[in-house]
View: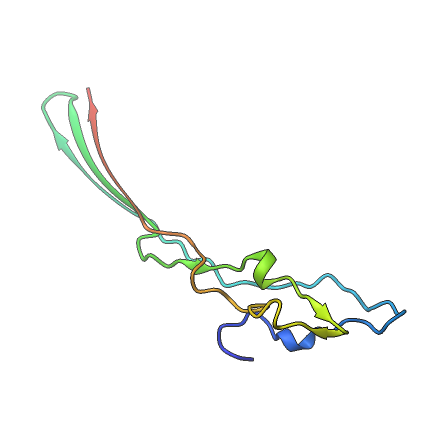
Length: 114
């Protein structure tokens, strides 16, 4: 299978005229989702029960976005005369490089307890 594809698009075909196909709902397994969070804080005593806390949190701190397909473009097959129409949908089965899920989020915080 070529690089950048979720599956082999040439394995799909339309049934013969007047025949029912062997339709089975396909199972497509996507890429693993990686999400690592990091949180660091430091407490400062201000006397008595008063306390100041500085926080730094980073969600998905390794910034590992996951590309995901567009159902109407990458997962919809069109057939012309019983053959896969690659002119109508040239990106069928291909994993897009411009659609990604997940991003790094950084949060800073200060907490004062009294």
